Length: 219
Image 1: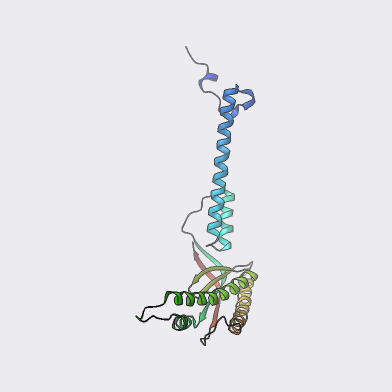
Image 2: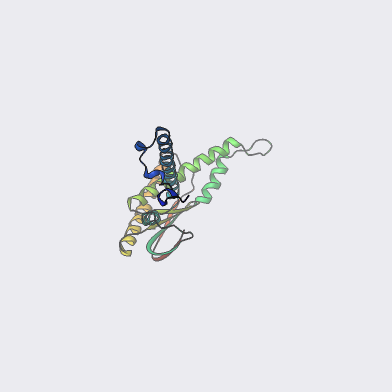
């Protein structure tokens, strides 16, 4: 017998409210619906975790770019090669290498066999980290104050990106941040020396360079 067209393909399950289905079928329908909702929630949580992790290593302007891609339903393709108008700061600590050597010489004692004392080396490392982290903490706070993004750390050096509505404004923010770094870090180092935190004769200085213009950024 020919099958009536209306019976050739059953309507999708989602088209039938669970209240109109037999009890057994309604239970199955609700279970599938709940499973789909759970999977969507898990996918959203994974995406949020990935975005938060990605944000730790990415400039703010790229995060906003990716969010705009998502709003439009477009796929993000890597690598990305952007040419933008922005300002950059490059800073580094002068005397850092000599400071490392001085801490090792002062604290890294040796035993009768000439072996390095592990406890002393650990103390030298702690002192060095205390000084450097204190300087970086101040710099990062200043970068945030002037709406910049720390792009990368390289040993005792730091790269900072500034974007604004115009290149002139970005350059002004970068210059103001650089001047604040010079004054703030110099005072921080003096304070640490006065408190006995940096108890060596080695002098640390911060050097800062500022540039502005067209910048190529790869992600």
